Amino acid sequence: MTVPNQLSDDRAEEGPVPGGAADVDLADPAFWQLPRPERLSAFARLRELDEPVLFTPRPGTARTAGKPFYALVRHADVRTASRTPQVFASAPGVTTPEPAGWAKALFGNSMVNMDGPGHAALRRIISRRFTPRLLAAAEENIGRLAGRLVDEMISERSRDFMPSAASRLPLEVICDLMGIPAELRPRIARQIDHASEHVGVERRGRARLRIPGRGLASLARMQLVMARLAHERRRRPEDDLVSALVRADVDGEALSSRDLGAFFSLLLVAGVETTRNAIAHGLHLLDGHPEQRELLRSDFDRHISGAVEEIVRHSTPIIQFRRTVVKEFPLGGRTFLPGEKVALLYASANRDESVFTRPDLFDITRSPNPHLGYGGGGPHHCLGAHLARVEMTALFRELFTRRPVIRQTGDPKLVDSNFDNRVGSLPFTFGPDIT
Image (spheres, rainbow, N blue to C red):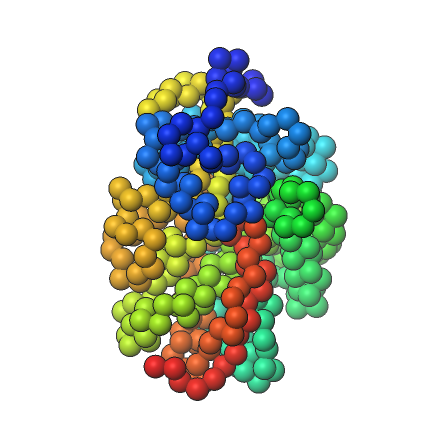
């Protein structure tokens, strides 16, 4: 369905946020430079209002602030919008600003920006690859990888957790699944890092958002590497995901080179970036809550599942995605109209007091824990959620059940962002037991 690009005139000129949230402006890049506790407090005030608030970028603010949007901040509203794609569409784009037409023509359209049968067909291609046999083999491989990485961290006396383990484990797992040769992995890792470093808010100088899509040169280089590998797999297929993709078809048509490139980029960037941040936040949370760390160490197998879910809820690696309304729909006290934009604020939904008792508390025994950290369900629920859980479990097993014990030596360097909860660096060391 075609929808207008602008909000209806009678809604685009709403005034300031009412009540105790009058000072909240999610469309201002400066908001995303505030300390995280202040942003979470602002979300809490927005959740107290009767209906979602419209935020409109002011004249003169950064172009990347995007179009006017309604902020969905309550758990129930975000969950409903996530599971109602026939109303809240991912096309034309889930980030802000939306992907330009020329970028889609050059790099292909990412699956996260698609809806309907085309999106479903692409998901099926991946889902069919995650057979019980493949998942069992992947879990064994992840366990071995985690042990090797921690051994290397100790022997090499690494000092930054991000490049030594948090980034390497998900990268190696994705590369193994895709069948990327070892000699190509360092180059792929550099392009992923360059592409994802442009997600955030600059601290210095004039405030401006750095958003997904700015690392186009890095994406282009990564897609070129993958295009060569895809060509080789067409000639000599192997038992890997790249071979499956190059032989796949959607509605009777083979995937184009651009489609393959967009798919590869999504798997590599999303599959690595979100998991690395969850792992890093997990180490920080467990080190900063010694009673929770010791509870986990006292019976790892009993508590690790709850710990993983609570880490994802508490840190919420992806802060928000956007949706476009394609038909009239009542939600959260307001009737939305076609063409309107909404922001699904997972970071707020995961702190909703009506769902989570003492939501700011980090509690690995929290049950139930219906967080929306993997996208809130629906057709865009994270395909890699299971693998992410397995990776976190394997790495934390190595970090918290062996000796010597890992310890933080300083605060993590966080990257201000309106998109993801990214950790730039996290200093650590291994030392004597700290029970």
